[in-house]
Structure formats: C-alpha cells, structure tokens
Length: 441
Image 1: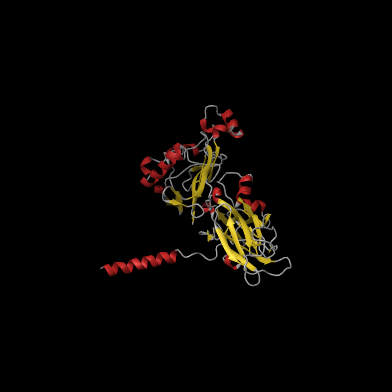
Image 2 (image 1 turned 90 degrees about the vertical axis):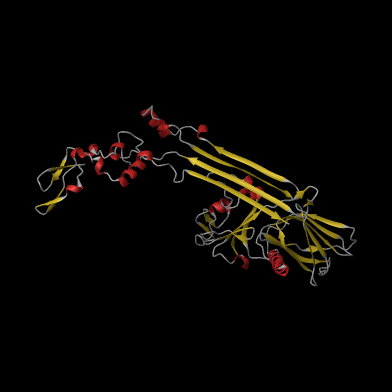
C-alpha cells in the first residue's frame, strides 16, 4: 500500500514539473539584440550584457558570441537599463530603453577602450524605426490611452482606439477590417494567448479591463510565424504587472436622469396631457467604476517578493439602465379588446353582402362556430355587438391575454393604433463586471 501511494506521489510531482516548464515564444514579450564592436569597428566577443527592468528589478543576462552578436529573448515589456562590460573597455550603460509588445529591438554598441571602473552613460529611448523586421504596426502605451478622450457608453473598450487612430484599420469591435482584409479575420492576443471566442477576431464582453492594459499593439502586416492564426491582422494586448512600487488607481463615471433636462418631445406631450406622468424624464442611468492595484507579494515575517514575485489586479463595473421611449409607432390591444369586446372596431359602413343577402360592415367579426354553406358559398354569423363571449375564450388564450394585460396596455388612451412605444434602445438593461488578475514570478 505504501509503494502504491509513493508511485502516485511521484507521478503527481512529475506532472507539476511538466506544468511548470517555461513557455518558449510569448507574444507579450520582446527581444533586444545587436552587435558590439570596438572603436575600430572590429566585433567584440565575450561582452557581458545585463538588462535590468527598471520597475521590477528583474535581470536578464547574456554574452556576445564569436561574431559580437547578442540577443536577450522573451524579456518583459517596459523600460530597461542595459550595461555592456568587458575587461579593457569602459562600461557602456544605456538608460531608459523601452521595448514594446512583440518588438525585436536592435541596440548596437561601440565600446571605448578604458578601465572597467569608467562608465559611458547614454540616456535615450529605443529607435522608432525598426529595420530588422517587416512588421507594420502601431503601439499605444497605457498613459496615452488614459489621456485620450473616451466615451463610457457601453463600457470602455481599448480596441476602439484602433478604429479611430490606426491607419488601415476600419470598422468597430464587431465587424473590423484590417489592411483590406475580411471581417472576422483578425486574431486577438492577451499576453500571448488567443482571446478569440466563438467568432474569429471578436472578443466583445471578454476584452480586458482598460485599467489592466499596459500596451495595445495593432499589427496589420509583416507578422512573424507565431501569428499564423489570422488572415487579417493582430490586436495584441499586454497586461500590466505588479512592480516593486505599490501603485493603484480608482475611477468613477456617472450619468443620471436627475441631472438631465427632459426631452423636447416629452415637454410637448406634457403640454397636451398635463396629468400624464408618462412624459416625465425616463430612467436613464449609466455607471462606470473600478480601479486597480499592484505591487510585490509581501507576507510579513515569511516572504519578501521584491525583485521576484509581483501581483496585479483590476476591476471594472459597468451598469446601464435606459428606459427612454421611442416614437409612438407600436400598436397593442386595448383593455376592451383583451376582454373580447371589439365594438370599437364596428362601423356602419357596409362593404358588401354575404350569401344570405345580409350587409357586411367594416370592422365586423364573425363566429367561426357558425360557418356553413349557402348555395355553395361559405357564410358565418357575426358576433352580436362585435363582442366575443368570455365562454368562447380558451384557457391558453386567456393566459396570453393576461401577459398583455399586465405589461402591454396602451400608453395613449383613445387610440386603437399607434398607441404604444418601445424603448429607445434594443437593450435597455445591461450590467457587466470585468475582473483581471495577474501574478508574475
């Protein structure tokens, strides 16, 4: 029995080890590469290169090869401080070097002869033009996104910026067209994982919370093979991570009919019907609230995750309730009709005669139970007074009538047609909660 349990324990540990294997290609990462030379232009092998992520302190190191080339692969996006050092040369330090989602950044360095105690410091961002790849793309940082004006009607969607500011991108988050491609042909990645659900390229309510997005990149052509699941382009979301510094945000947007003026049409209708509350300001409310928080994982006395383990979370709550009415162009049965009384339809205008020589009037209804033939023609007797007896209304019909009686009576009295209105929008009630959580180690 002990051997049996030990075998299962070994299998469990093996499964955990396999599950913990690092991922190789991640679309939410970047690559930094280049060539190191001396002042004469000769390549310098064996140069020690260290890249430090400024916000998390995470270090990535490598060496130049025999021909002076180096690559730092799968580094998290953000701002870096890179140092190049080799005995006999001054230390070269590059500050404020930003890399973005899916970028292959090139940084060529010329080392100056000198002592390792001497440092040459250059503070500059990465080059805007990348000559190493044919990728055509546009990247927006989180600070740009939050600074741009954005309507919160329908909730905040980061990808809406793509259709407004990215060349070659048209449409909306339902039917989008990238670089002349077909609708529903793009791919969407969130931290390197495909976010496409039921319909290709559409993420709808499953889009990441805006507070959680660090970068948003639109790739329209020249993508590498890792983006093979698209015949259009790629929307690439990179989520924020926690850093060594605790930080957070909070926001609230609100709309309420109490702060709005009544519509012109409602005011006009109130003038005609002073006592009708139908034309008061309708419920028209939108609420958008949420926030984010991130930092190192610290358990006092047990664990200090600075430079190692980070947590980040964001939540966004959107609620919309708008019961404004559209035009009075809908027709519903009156209370009398629901009781079987159609006398209001009956007129004194004859429209012809039946086979028995009786006048048939406009609006007249007939009893199907009295249907019979007279000289080869079908004839029915009219309901007396155009009223259907309650005993003739089936139980099923009575249940349907109750639904109308409880919720679909006319809004305007005295009208037989165009006596009701639908809500101004097709979805007058919509609530959505979005939650994002990310852990890095």
